[in-house]
Image (cartoon, rainbow, N blue to C red):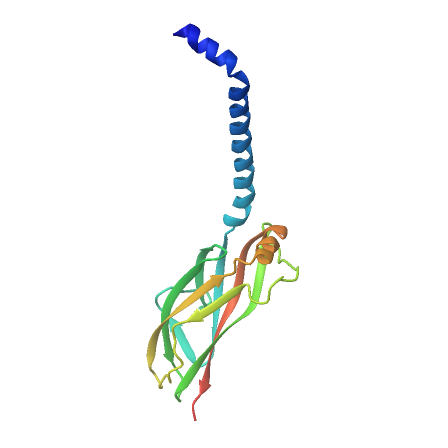
Amino acid sequence: MCDSLLNFLRVKKDIILLIIIVSATTLAVSTIISIWLSRYHNLHFPSLGTIQVIGVEVYGGDVNKTQDGTPFIDWGTVYPGTTTSRSFYINNTGNTPVTLILKISNLTFQDAENQNVTGNLPIENPLELTWNYNNTVLERKEVIYVTLTLTASSNKDFLEYLIAYDVTKFSFDIVITPFEQH
């Protein structure tokens, strides 16, 4: 049995060597590709969103407050191409009915050394902030519960921007303002 195995190996040594080379090359190439792709797919960065409000109050749910009372949302770790949701209450503290408007301002990216990134963004809206509020009139002293959804772009140019500038976190202002009803 041993002699027949040795004879087989001698006769087929070129084929066996080829199989070993192909297997090793395949393993090496797949490892290199996996490492390269992990640079894109393991991108993540923590985020805070300070909430600026006029004529309304936000509280509860996922809203936290700084020592000076400024409301903010900790979005946690955000991955490109994913969505993250946070919820809270909005109270119309004004004297008139209002419809609410939501927007993002002061978007800032920071690098690993906590320095603001000054490179131009390759896309116009790398983050999209939406909510489940349907533009209904919010009466005086009325309270509603809303959910904000943050979507981080998975655009290739944006991912390359994050890598090139070593972006590790970002922040932005969530601006909720009333549009008064007359």
